[in-house]
Image (tube, rainbow, N blue to C red):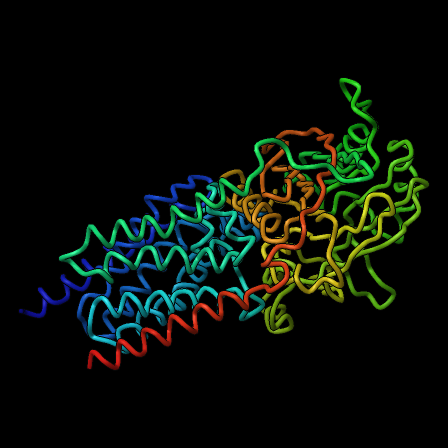
Length: 507
């Protein structure tokens, strides 16, 4: 084989890998094509590890990851075009470094599989372990980014109910095992392997359908009526002095609207992230107006807070019916390069600041997960925006919540896949924990989610409005709520031990 032929062969392999990555990305919201995505994953796990040098396999794995992350996370460019003159030049670099950087985790998994065995079917088996471990690592290292995990392709399907047992990483392990089975059975029994893979996915789907009740979830006792407010403040106008009073008055009007069709008035009103345009220390007059509009309801509202030392916080406060602050929560899991800058002083010299930066260069992290006692409305776990993607943070809360309040400003994410993927992750948190999620999003998608992850009611993107919903009751603690990721780690260890034994016997 001549050198040009060798180079062409390698480039074709990389192009195929990238295309298969795009196919896998189609399983994520808003498309949600789970079964075609599974087929792409199966093809990648069978074809990209065919006997080659480990370095070639690693490059293929990296290209596969690049295709996947570029297709699933292309919305990452949206925040840079809110202020295009200041940040627009960063957009292509953000997507390039995000996709290429995350793909390094997958490249390592492919390289490790190729190093551990020369047999294609064993390499596919090791990929199940390696890619599962890679997804676990990227969910935790460098503050973590568990967005668009492989197992998330099932969020719209009954298979998502298995997250109540093993969480998102369990769904990933299940998906990888099913995709590897055709290669594990070998080319002579490819059809049998495909059938086995389908069964691995179909059986959790059957269990998930049996788990779901036929009707709506049971309601909380005592009954709690919640109003979710969506003002629809586009990010480029949100802090415009001419528009600030428009959005604020719109929220007050929605808060004070008389319920339709005899629905009881709200016991609790929820406004989105940073929806009060004044700092906490100056917001008392606004709180009084919110209380008056609420007509006896408690409120959860997002705003900024600056302490006497000059530190800024992205906060949520609970207001009693009189408009007094009953509790405060400060966001603790901040968005790197958005709400704070790693190596801030170095970047400041270069004139580069976070997208949500203020004069301090960013926010300060709060002390950690917290429960707010809302009396008859129960114990609520507040999550602000990005925090809803981290299941481990929920597990670190000081107790089990009756429900989760997710306030967010998804105007940063554009109008395509970002807000829909964010909503899907909030639904998965409900399934994992067995608790309802009430979600107030500035521009949408606001939603009431029951403890099975089903959307009871929602406001679409780009509209202003309100949702009046009765709070569902929480389920008993799920196995995932009790054990977290320990179950998946144990399964991975046993899988690796079995593969290790087969690898040694094959040499």
